[in-house]
Amino acid sequence: MVKSAEVVVTAIGVGVTISVTVLTAAEGTPVENAVVVYGHLVGVDPETGDETYFWMEDKRVITGSDGKALFAGLEPDWYGIQVRAQGFQTAFDLSIDATEYDPLPITVELERTSACFVATVAYGSPLSAELNVLRRFRDRCLPNQIVHVYYQVGPYLAQFIKERRAIKHYVREALNIVVKACRRI
Image 1: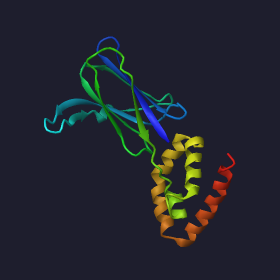
Image 2: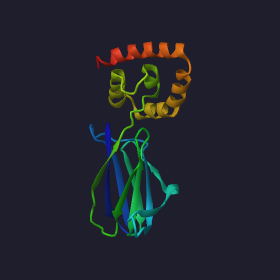
Image 3: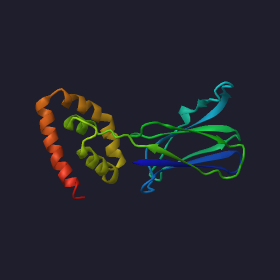
Image 4: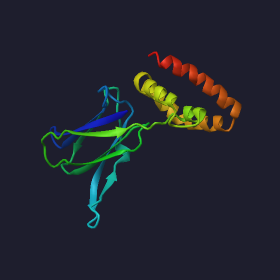
């Protein structure tokens, strides 16, 4: 599953406003609880061209139910925007020129991790066909809050199950029932 973030820079009153909307690519629905941070450009490495930012972690914004984050009253300057969302492989870093006041729409994509921790241990492989069914169910049916909790506790559950052969068997049998039901959805 791929998600994207659309970033729009506009001038509102005095200063620059950076509006970030995080949406699912497939459904176009807002993503709650994505962390959006801006940073000031502090330098560019002359040899590599790599940009260095001072990230304003204390001013980070968590997207709400509308998937939006807003930074207002910024000075016209070059900024970095970083979008992190639970369940995605990497954060997305974006460099934007906010010295201009024209709207600047930019779309970026983040790939969801395939983190089916418990099912991977139960089935013995991340390539198991059952995992694809469970991932599809997760992406289409589960609320972000439940997925977020699972990503927090799933690795611990997987480690517990991995070390206990009998429990792994029962978990796999229970997941087989879930997979069978999910195939009907």
